[in-house]
Length: 259
Image (cartoon, rainbow, N blue to C red; front, side, top):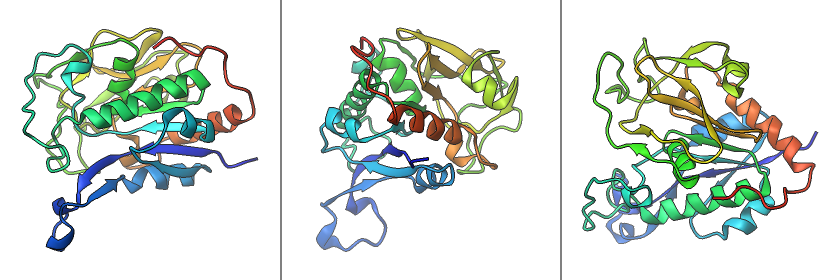
């Protein structure tokens, strides 16, 4: 069985954000990727490939068998009609919490290309939200914390509320992988609101926050938690690698999905 190539998205930062970097290089850029994604992909039998900003989305997706769109800062509200003001003077190369239009455009283009080529997609946290936005959906701008903690104050990978249970829809990918429910970690203050075209909610918490989505009849899943940082291996990576092997052996869909 061939090992599928799984693309993993990341950030672009100034090297000056890294402690004790020589001042001579502080204004150079670096591409930053959480290694836990690559570790999990490799453990599931795939070959992890970090995808930088400066690629042509369609051409790189032609070489990939699967795609992971990872977590990070908020999606710029201009992409989905949000009302929060974003200070244009705050540079995402120097502030990892600042919305990054370049990253938004890069990852959105990868999602569109993957959808059109029928390449399996896993969206994680921000990636889950961006998948919804690319398909025409909107976001909850800010979650008010209640009895369920969504923006855990704990450090990764140990954060999350012990009572943060997600319930899954029978027949969905998530239900097949986890059963009726699963306790997950959580580091987010926004969430999926109005669903994008073709998406369905397949997992949610008791307070109604959307935690998992799926594109009908396609190998496309988004989750709000961080499967790369779960205490035990998350079967989502096995699912993605298995579907990517299948995807690599068949021709791309004609027309794909309207985005």
